[in-house]
Amino acid sequence: MEAHSTGGRPLRVALVAPPYFDVPPAGYGGVEAVVADLADALVERGHHVTLLGAGRSGTRAEFVRLWDRPVADRIGEAFPELAHAAIARAAIHRLDRSHRFDVVHDHTLAGPLNAASYSAAGLPTVVTVHCSVNDDLRRMYGSLGSDVGLIAISERQRALAPELNWVSTVYNGLRVGGWPYRSRKGDFALFLGRFHPQKAPHLAIEAAHAAQIPLVLAGKCSEPVERTYYAREVAPRLGPDDRVYGVADAAAKRILLSQARCLLFPIVWEEPFGMVMIEAMACGTPVVALRGGAVPEVVVPGVTGLICEDPAQLPAALTQVGELDPAACRTHVATAFSVDRLAAGYVAAYRRAIAGRTSEPSLVLPVSRPRAPYRRLPSGSSTRR
Image (cartoon, rainbow, N blue to C red; front, side):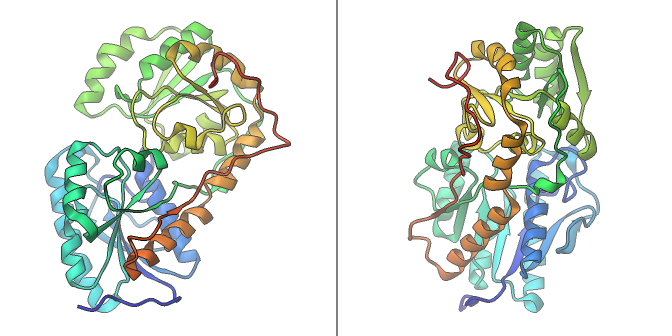
């Protein structure tokens, strides 16, 4: 069939969210937070967006409920992914008769398997890859070829699998106005994320103890790997100045991020983006991180945080980070990771996919690096040499 034509007019987008959390999420759910901001930003710019997901309607997009309630308790199971893909495919084909979509934008794991079906109906498919591309995903995405246009969320993520059909790199973004700014910080460092070996909260505990700084740990600990890791590596290390908060909902997360002296981000894997880093900086809170994945693309060393090469450097960074300017952190997010940039990047990617120009050089939205009047810290043991 002939592909839908758009010219320069507003686009009609089918946006597929995972089935695990509301959009936007009440607590944990980085993908869902990005999808919610993107949906609203596209609608505000005159595009027609149909959001397919689970639970309640929380955006300005037309909402199609595929599951009565989110199935967060089934993360990691194969069946919800496959069922969601099948249900979404049927819904999109049904809705396309009246909506005449221009593009399907999928944010799920199994959803890309529908691309050939959409293509037969004249619909291009773009997929945001929210996770690290392991060997299994490389095989799957590679087998789909040009049926799916992949969108990376960092240049590092894309560089690790250069043979795939990447059509664009679009950094995640957020509405800065939705995050509270606070220039005066508390005395505690914050770990906010999953209790998972890749996120390495045990390194956060060790660094905070060595720096003699109180630590608050907030995050999800529900999957078997998380519970096992917590019992073996986190619980035995906890001291009297450590506070385990549990899962922080949307309101509590903002309070914690705005009050912390820094976000401690000691990852030991190829983090494809790290949404919590820009959430912290939007609150005026700098980041202390280990170099890995997209960290160097998100944090400006000596301005919005300190990047360490080794866990042994984290304690010194925790003491130095208080010298950074909170206003510079928020400005960086407003400049480099705004919803305006998010929406513009995706609209450009949609139009490329619709036009079938996937062989042309990809659109890359670079991180804007703040310059004067912000003062960089001199090079030290906790920053890159």
